[in-house]
Length: 65
Image (cartoon, rainbow, N blue to C red; front, side):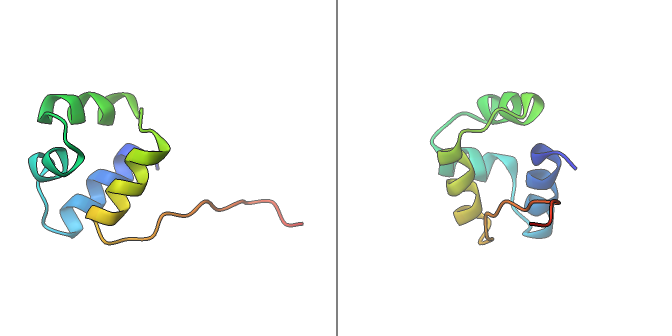
């Protein structure tokens, strides 16, 4: 699942609108739509999105070491 798909799913699960997230990020709804389409989120964007959606941001590895 792509990061954009995860963000969209989390928005639905939290009953939040794209426009609310865009406002929280300080960008237009169209800019958010473009970021979702391209999957182009900075690390700072992802931290803010996790805060907005009240979820944990983490990276998992499939490799066992």
